[in-house]
Length: 275
Ligand SMILES: [Fe+2]
Image (tube, rainbow, N blue to C red; front, side, top):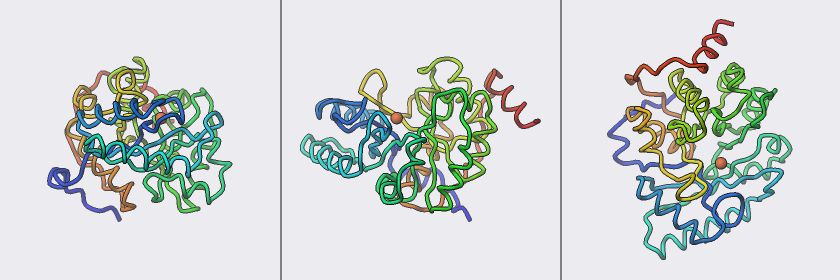
């Protein structure tokens, strides 16, 4: 049973949480120095964020482990404290989907978002994927939840949104990248991102920041540009707070949404639903 969503009142107490951010230095394709990490942190605070989950890649290219991530989270938090930056960093990881299937329970349990049950999994960018819903169901049986990172950028989901819908039906949540909503990854990704939101297939918006400028932190401006301020509380406070404290995911509030122009994504979703 989902807990009732109490909207604005709750948002006044809970901080904006960025659930997906490459803020740890020298560990992946994010910042390479602590100075770079602090620049991301300051930009995040300026954008209204108060908690960041550090999600370095855990992939075939970047074979990071939980002990390294925990050590760097400690160092970044100490630097933030010393610099007077009002931001808290929690440990997490962005695990390449094909690698997650190979990790044992001990490793997986130490790579969850904030130490609870949710794993952030990065789908392949290829135009064909299979078995995502089965993978989600397998993790559910083991007691993990799956948050799918930036599904809007996955060509296979664009081609066949039913794969994504089946994964959500199996228990997955979807975390959109804020920049996708404003065209930072191209028009097709932007259109698909908007359609996913419209069809209720998005549960969180995160920054997926890699630096302070090119792929910056912050979600509020992007949500406002996409005319999604009415969902911002739920997407960037209520849902990520539930993910981090292990409570039930609050239901999406009923809100008025603007009519977006229909594009390829809408057609695909309609076809998928008819088919
Ligand atoms: Fe990422």
